[in-house]
Amino acid sequence: MSVELISGSHSVGEANYHMGFTPAYRRPIFQKTEVWFLTRDYMVAAAKRHGITIRAVDCGPDHCHVFTAACKNHSPAQVAGLLKGFSSYMMRKNHSALFAEALYGDKFWSGGYFYRTVGAVNVTTVERYVKDSQSKHWTKDSRQRKLIEFRR
Image 1 (cartoon, one colour):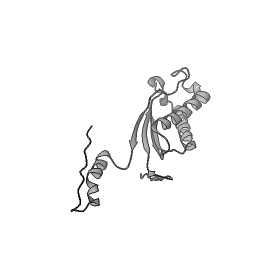
Image 2 (cartoon, rainbow, N blue to C red):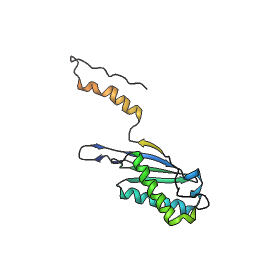
Image 3 (cartoon, helix red, strand yellow):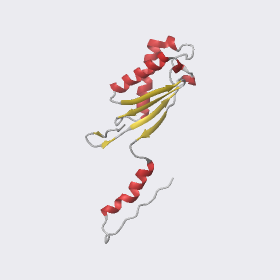
Image 4 (cartoon, one colour):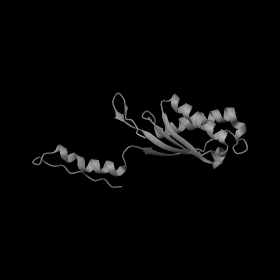
């Protein structure tokens, strides 16, 4: 699966996130197929409305993984808020009887989330590029600048 670069008026790049959400109290509400399908469909609808592409969604009994692409105008916090907020609202408004025994009150999702940025290259590749590729810009008799290595 290749991910296309997104062109903006002043930028070119990609912004993809692997995100993980858990239902409130980590209850296994996705054991019910209907809850899982409805939640997925609401997340896809929210993403589409905001110009975010969902490449994959899958759930375990008590958690949900989402792979988003084309998120250049949204931070991970915004993406999580959009997906969780709309799906929670719609599930509680229209389908609360499906999970009423497991969840109570106005909660559907837990407060936190997991995210990791995903790209076509990894940390090692970028580090090697930054360290080794700039020598092509210098001739042998010009002064060579040395890269200052930053360590955590």
